[in-house]
Image (cartoon, rainbow, N blue to C red; front, top):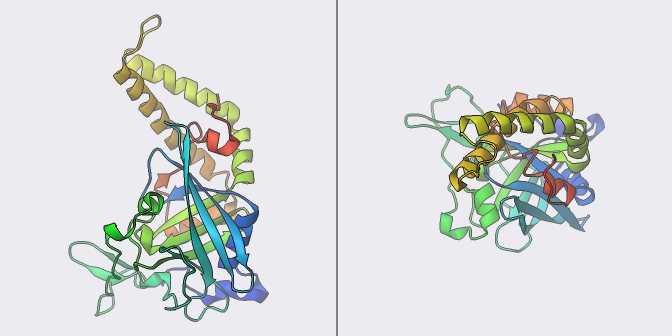
Length: 299
């Protein structure tokens, strides 16, 4: 089984590590930024989430995801109604179920567990509970919602393959107040790491001089490579190429640097259950406005 699929993580007396309700409560108090993904990347977007608790007894909330578009300096958001649920055999809620039709999500069917998501290629199909196909019968793929059913552009981009037309489940792989990790079949079974704004701002502030220096180095390097000379006006193509190159290499550099500065337990949990992060969503340059509420380059 995947390491995340163990009821031991949810024994209250041990301090639960996969507490969906705690994630919603913390997200109602703080903003969380999407830092890393293993699947279904988004580009030219900065993504953050907030929540509003609607019923503590029923453990429901409104969960809002916001996109910031650096190129147009605009924001777009969507809100879904969510409910904390338990997968089979779990004593505490470890699943955030989001309704895709604008109503409160139902508690049924019971979430089966993230290990039931199938991984497949052209020749094999097997359950995530068997990392190597050792069972005689392969797991059946869960049906996906047709693209036409999911109209919301933010949800469609972040969660392109919901397992049901009515809802999608987000399994809490690990959580602490500073961060949480979620695996969702709607994101091709991949993992997301969300980092609390307080920690992210602290990291960015601590790295501010390094970010400025690295950005200046890359601008100088790629101006030379793109033959953008002093006292000469760059073409629109050169400007676009320069911006792309600088941002691309800034993100690669920042991914390595920030990974060493996020809470250790969060990084370890991500590596153990999800593997190395594939996509860095947060850019230290273009996403700075969504972090500070000011449209200013960090430099």
